[in-house]
Image (cartoon, rainbow, N blue to C red):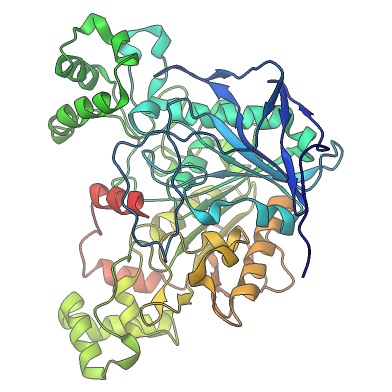
Length: 520
């Protein structure tokens, strides 16, 4: 058995633009946790961080406060970690194999999920950057930033100091990318080869960065994992915060000229005021924040407002998973259903067209149980395909689509769900028990990691143990299907989605999606 090594005393102090850092070495990697990349007062833009002396960065930093207490459940499917919270949460974590400033390792920057209102850089066990760093000879960075009403509530009407407060959370991310750009050479990274990747809400923030001019030049490739939703379901915010903030002030017995006092209101009381007044404003279509605000800083959701030309020059990988939000356990064992029982289940969903759907599903996913169509994602896959085609227009950089369609040894072969691809891309399947599929786990993890790392290094997912994976074009839509046997298929599920959409109404509401994303 390999003996793991821990070192601290002889690990060199790192000089950064903010000050000196002292991390540690463990089992082949240098680790720096809770590095402050910026500082910000409530509702204000981040400022450069600075400290005196040598700062010990061996503990994860505080994470953004959440508006509600999470409930541990579904831990087999998406194992979590919980951490102390504080508004001053602008910190990041770094894993690297070398401190050679000339190493020029690719830099992979992770943006966590949880929509724009929850989550943290260490929330999921699979977010740990050690495995990806060691396997990929890469510098892996994960970021904490402001969320919910701290990160996405516009107070600009109440003073210049609050300018762009409706995008404070994304401004934190840009500040982190700027800190990484200025300092990553000291950690063995290449500031000219930075890839941002994120899942769910983190994927949405990756798309946001492509629409923010201040982020130009701070990253060079992008991966959006389960992070593209219909623009009607998760639209960018428009308008301003005068009504919602005035209502919050009134709820706190404050006048319109006392907005600054909201900076000192305890967070729990701020949340209480917001949750009391926001439903009525939202019901009549008013601005209540919660998502980035379209303005001169942020150009809006690309599916809603178009993609900046700069965004088309950044190689982009976009992926989804087969089941996305199908978290509920099945009420049956699909491996033991008779034809009559299968038909009855499909008829409950598709009525007289059940057989038509079954035949189309078998053509689309040969070998999979036809009842899996009841778990098929109708939230992310279609918008992801639309964004891929939008990005591919002009052919200025590669555009790559994937769909993670693996079945797990859980609840009689449960199809892949939201977050289930994360351990494979992070090379962390050994940390997530449900991934322990003999003969599959290690091979698929290697295939996905190799493709991902190739993309991060070169902008193309070339991998000797995978089929040739070509870029999307306005006319062709190759998709890599990650499964027990991986394959590339073109426009393979168009017919199935068209058929289902002709039968069923649009899937789910924004509120239901947000509730599920917080829970997982």
